[in-house]
Image 1 (spheres, helix red, strand yellow):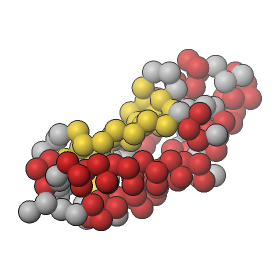
Image 2 (tube, one colour):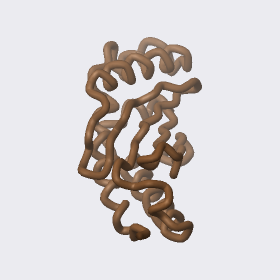
Image 3 (cartoon, helix red, strand yellow):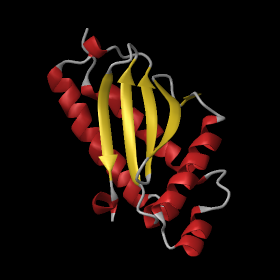
Length: 153
């Protein structure tokens, strides 16, 4: 049975909920790094790596009954990636049309969440790129969304 697009719409709320995690447990803070290093990319990359390491101490994290945040990765060029698994959705549960509808909907909702998140402001000021990777329960990549400064500013 194919799952309707509305089934995955619930993951938007959980995705937005992890925004506040991005600023947690960073030492020094993004604000301090920016003030001291004039937005130096290698310094920001190190800060993001430390942030991801701290966040991953609490992973994996079940965000809701259908979605798990597996881990957070710091990638080169000031990129922070959130890696999710839809634990109750195998790739074959979504037809092409349903996947496209969910993808379009999620992309817009996540971007709106980034734009509106005050918890992510320091990361946005540092011009961090945010990636959201969603895999199916059978470990097949379903969606990857990448949002850079030109998207959220």
